[in-house]
Length: 71
Image (cartoon, rainbow, N blue to C red; front, side):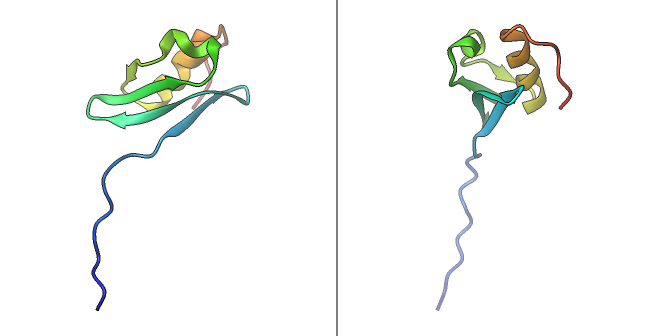
């Protein structure tokens, strides 16, 4: 007999890259998406929460002095 258990609703991290360079990951939270920097040049936004993954990606691009990027 097999039992099916629902998977926990913990979100998986999503990598944030700008121009092919990984800058961090976002983790879903009850308030949005929390950015965790993995590169020094993205630490300006480390720990910030964004409404969407696209907002986090745009903020990461601005943090490193890049142009706005399309999602």
